[in-house]
Length: 341
Image 1 (tube, rainbow, N blue to C red):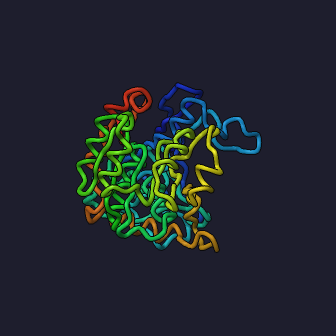
Image 2: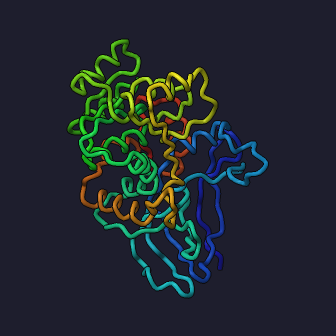
Image 3: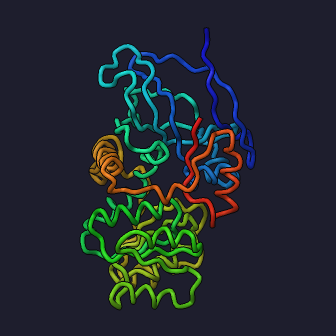
């Protein structure tokens, strides 16, 4: 007798539905997970939801395509093991790269398999963000040594908020968060050592220097996802400093004079896409996914990475359409969103 689950699906731009699907049985080296909660990745998922993701019209890519089943960060419990699986047990709680579905299948033999045990005391709505947290962690890794360096984060969505807290955990100081939304600034300012500034304040740059003892920050993390923000990020960083692009900018950055804005000030402009942390070591990117995820799980289990004030909505998946609409149109109320079944 087939078992049926449910999943969120985007049949076309600006439409979100919940549909039934047949739950597969795990094959060799696979395991089946029943999802507790899954986190919405606002940047990637809203880009698909609104139809602006740069790969939607790329004929060389098969992902993403409509109908689209969103999500890549979830927590759940193992319910069935395929042949040859000995490293996990039925009932074990794990974080994994699951979509917004009641059940997910993980192939342990796949190069990109992402699954890690996590303790039962971590709330599901927070544990669901573990896989997403590896992206702001990439900004920390790509920045190099951060202890004692000043960091400003431009854009205080989930990625920017988590980036601030991870930089703090790695010893960066002082820390500044910059955003035009007051509620997001309030969340950032609740962390020790963080000053929050209004992006639209004409005195923002002077305030940034004042928060850093009269100097420009050593590192500026661009987490808005707006390609036009790179010029501002470059203008804010100290001469010889680093601008780290973690916001997956979608589009072309105009009016950037690379001679004066970059070359003339010896700035380093660094890409921090999640692909920088792969499954195996590479010459340019030696930091591997296992090391990153083990550390992030430890941060969540130990309370070193707090998400209680970042996750503003923990909703039943039936309300997923309202959640996407809120993330898109009500940024003063919606920050982090987890779905449950």
